[in-house]
Figure 1 (tube, rainbow, N blue to C red):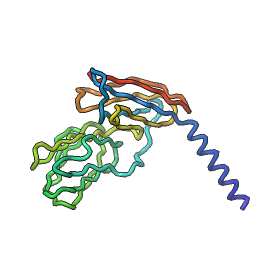
Figure 2: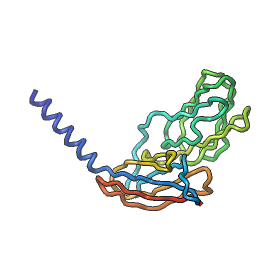
Figure 3: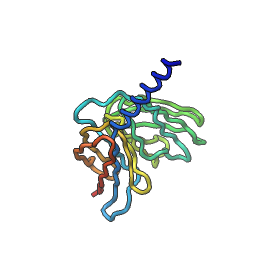
Figure 4: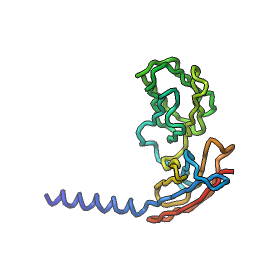
Length: 195
């Protein structure tokens, strides 16, 4: 009984230290007219240490109503992405992108395929049958990322430290980047504008 109590106290102390050592970034992304931008990816790339290996659950990009859902997905390099066909027709998903060239030949409604994305970069997805279908998969070197909501806001929590913030969106020709120090136990806000 006494050892369980001691173990519980040690675990609580460790959890409290981890929570106190973390920092939060709140990013707001707007267009040139000041309107919020949805589906922008905000990632925190550590400058003083290596990012940990992926522990995220698999990503998912579904085919539904002859569209890819979601339109933008972000995963850490080394993560598996599942491609379920929730549609009533066959799909033939492919990418010719430098980060990952692949082809998932015709597969039926109800079936799913999966791939691991090892290399960082942008993967543009298409369907060989339905030319209008397009989606973007951004593979980043970090587990600390978020996607903006309808208000153009994204929140990412990471260990306190120095980072390079990268903001990517399909409308950008190159990611926006800046360095930042995130203090432990604090929330830092940054605003970005797509040009």
